Picture 1 (spheres, rainbow over the protein chains, first blue to last red):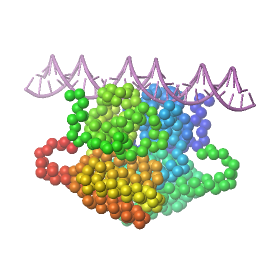
Picture 2 (tube, protein in one colour):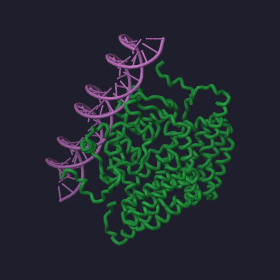
Picture 3 (cartoon, rainbow over the protein chains, first blue to last red):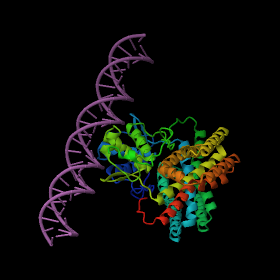
Picture 4 (spheres, chains in turn cyan, red, brown, orange):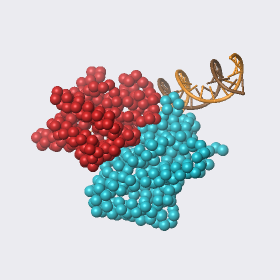
Length: 252
Length: 252
DNA sequence: GCCTCCAAAATGGTATGCAAACGTCCGGCC
DNA sequence: GGCCGGACGTTTGCATACCATTTTGGAGGC
């Protein structure tokens, strides 16, 4: 078996080809090979080809990506700064496996960021931007009607991305993209497993309506909790499962 | 003249030795030589030894830091991800020289982050943490009385750092540290040049009092604007100067 | 049978060498 | 005199080779 990752079940398909999270590599972010390799590995991590906790063997991965170890190592340093991999000195790199605590921290932070973005967007979003958000919202509704959870998830992400972009704050957009990449996989899984389609749609509608009303406080209020809700529901769900089967080993 | 940076006037002295910004290198942040070099360069940038816009010559800087080019290049990739240097493919690296727009973006984002941290701290800050913040506040007052702008600036930073830490959100603390590093120098200069000592102190008092009252909304409201105020005042000041001497070349 | 210690293999870390790209400078040409 | 073009030097980018550290397998002793 040459490519053992092919067998993984939890593979996350992306309907686009790359830059799934909208991680906007800022202006001077480099265009060297190392940055390109970093993007490749980032996608591999997000799509669960490199699952959390997996050790990264430099020589192996380098020859799989058909590059030398030097650019690969540069890529790992970049991803480490982004929080997607953990570097253990003299002991190699592993794909970051954030604890529940850390995931919660990042999600709460994301919620605060989006809330702020929403407040700013209330003041400065254009008609076109609002229209585009509504369009994405309806595409999301369409995916909901068809039961297409993947498309639903991506339109959902697109809406949040559009909202953040409407803030016109480059630093905010970049930070949001980075943090989003760190929890992308968790949110995807949470989206698949929880049953809260309807409430999320209602919240989105409320957000967009509040945006049109320029009701910044309301936008912020909803976004704060909206971002973390799916995850909290998933945690509750897992606790229930754990209560049913307490003998399950700590597999995380 | 061998070391031309020695002659710079705007050198920023740090009374501690390192980690001036409290940039908390997160858990798995690597302990290899590359990360160490990155920390060195970060300090050099923050302390204005490497001024914004300065090109970074790999061989030169490598031998000055007594390391080879490989770890130095890794360090540059890290700093690029942090937004402190810009990498131009095949054309080298330069110290990031953020535009006024970008500085404003980062500062507004920082304000939003601290506001959120303040809200959380309202709920979960301990008595000890509050006492420590008051202690730092009084140290800041002492520096104010002595006219020691450097100590004042550092105690000021310490207070904000303590506030963010009180949020107990690792991701928030880390992001705050990174963003803070990007505007550290600007804020230092703004602190030196503007005359708003008193109002800043009043605001800090109001923040701490609101914290004790668990008045999250008030804490957030003040912090939002507090962070950007010094910078805005500096911009107004520079515009006045520009109005007086309009013939000044575009020197930043 | 288990623990400990040692050695060898593998892995990450660093340094250096080579190739390609960019900027610059000088000379020729219009 | 000004402009264009080519050659040179410098600098970055990548790859490979070497070194240090860790880990793992096994053999010996308790």
